[in-house]
Length: 280
Ligand code: PAF
View (spheres, rainbow, N blue to C red):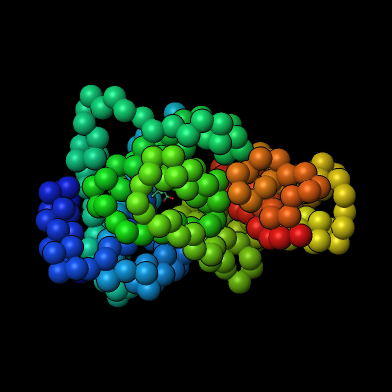
């Protein structure tokens, strides 16, 4: 496995693979890799001859007062994990390699980027869409893989790919969970041992709500309110809990069959998100 830091080195490697007729998959990450990321790499290997993993803590998707400065930087350990994962190339650029100091272009997916996580993190999805668009142009992969844990992010990216005609297959990969049900996340490292035990209740709240819907409970508003109450009782400060249509993340009505429940809540200093999707 090779590590490169510049766009031109990356492009030279991809050009060589392309001239040998090989297909390429991209796994974009911000590092601090865990089993969820390794599941993306493993799926990428099934999809393409060559796998590129990018590790780039993207400053434009962090808001003022968020954890950009303290976000865990674990490049050495990440590369060791990737060495045994079967990735072919790690792209580890500096911020100045990705963004011109006077960059003027922002990719913004209207509406969708302002709801749910976008409401509490203004500009976050513009940062995500812009960097993913740039990575797509840099690597020009056949396939790109993202975790379903960030369901709204995945929907933003799918919408961008459709609207901008990227010839890239977007693959969502199942969330990897701890035995407790807690979704793996780089930010779980911020949780104390006590908080970690409570954090698993976020997934429990989603399972309870899904089961209520599958059992025929009619009012989604009641389901959302009960979930918010449950989370508060567990010690969270919930941000939102919402029953949405899986395709476009608009609020679900009783006619919608493919649903996703999206939740975000703070536990102490840590902001957690999770979701569950299913068909009625
Ligand atoms: O999900 C992430 O780790 C990031 O948002 C991504 C997609 C790598 C863009 O920076």
